[in-house]
Length: 300
Image (spheres, helix red, strand yellow):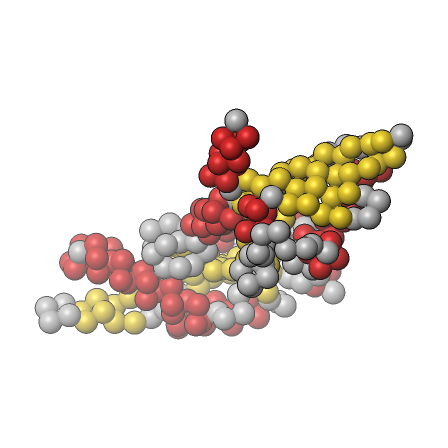
């Protein structure tokens, strides 16, 4: 039965550990040694082992460990380590405390390699936050960030710019969806080049983009919008057809206290006005005096 347990733990990448509290002596099963890229049965010095945890993890580990020893309550912690060979791994530490005569005598538990799970979660997070076609930020991440900055007391004024490609439908209709995808990729690159200081650039729809950019005034915002319009204007040439791509932009200054929905609606409204007036240009949503003063105060 002991052999069965050992084989099962090893297959599940789980190792057992123990630390004697009077003298801080560590005892590990071979699997834990493997986690740290150490030779099994090598003598262990806790001070040296702790150095293999990343600084942030080390701080958290010290906090939960001290609390466990003080209260007798166990803990679980996802810990990041840099092994003796320089490999980055994540291990899940589960700990219990044993008392003798009212004093914590040892702390023990299991450690499990969860690197693969952590990597998968991180990949899924990146996929959720990144538009795979253009490599810009995804709409999901944009909406989260936009809501955060609208509700926060920021020390600087920001603006929301909505950009819509003029001529994109002609690309899809005349040249096909692959050409349309290529057009969007080019648009993403050109937009990133036009506003390198943007806090965020996102693709929020088929040919719709959103930019969150620091700005000091309506005049400053006009300069930013001009860069977007000029930077996203190019010709797609084929042996049979030339298609002009231009960009319409609607912009609104983000005023603390206003809802993300209202600010987005303002930018979207003036974007519609640009497209109705002939496209290939920009407009900025007007601010009331009180809103302008609020935005200016946030920047001071």
